[in-house]
Length: 456
Image (cartoon, rainbow, N blue to C red):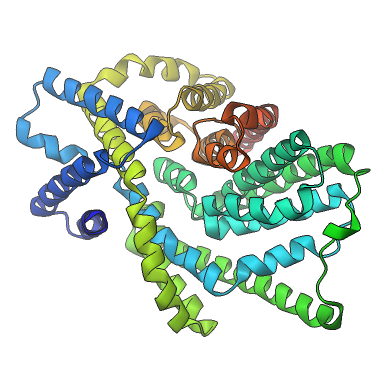
């Protein structure tokens, strides 16, 4: 039932992007309301609580402003682009599993590492690369892989290693990933092209990775791994084994490059938002990929049940994002945001101060339980009047990096809570290992963006 309702809603949304008819808009509203009610019975934890708060506040504002009752259905579309991406991501996740790319990277990770510092760098690279394709699923996968090596160390060292290595690599990978929702949303807010910020975001990622590796050298360089966990490729087939691993890495790199090019072409030719272009391109690229590696039959057998399982599990996101989108939409129409806008208007006269305000907004919002994508939606409404006066490229960089940085430390974010659950640890403690690093990343990004703003 959930799979049918969620899929119908997303299909209607996609059609509505091409055919702007009132019938489709009304249909989206009805299906969205059904999806929201259905998700209410399955949503849990922070998603349920946050969604209920948004729905109650939004409905209260709707009644207070005296909007016509029939227009209630027309306020659920704002977050459907984000939900669309969640619907198509399982397809590319399936390719990684079908092509055994995850196993190849794990082999590369464990082949002959002798010190914990060397192992840290390898696991960082593997996590960073796999995140581009598996997203949040990479954390439990690599936790299981790393345990083989890390079980020899005390629990305190293990938890700190997992938190810093995996969460930092995960967040920094999302900094430049064309499939990341925060990047798509930021680009759609500022109306720039992905290729305009790509080299800057990639440079920031490399620089922060270098900083992290430099810090790890002080902590782990002298910590040796025992010979029992120095996993090596079978000596008889070491050359051929490594060649297969490098071939897999090369294939993934090529397909990522093709994906970026195709998304840019679709965005340019259809004149649609970047996020929507990613959604349209994801499945065709996936099908081309499995055709080229000759795994179509296995892909078909695995993908459908895997996709159904993932879509069924989206109840938390459907409930929270539909409620949040409804609230933000009503908030924008009611004029309440005009009470907060002067703060950003004053700060906009001092660009560096505005960037600090944006970073502070993301940090505070995520620490009190707001999902980062919801915070981004709020912020989009607050800075909308200022966009004509702000340099779009520096602003995009600040929005992307400052929002992604919260993924490293927020106890309410899925990445931290999922890793904490794997480790059976307190999510606040796990997040605290990265708080200083994340703040440094925000300040560095703000400084870079401010400098770019002065020369552009």
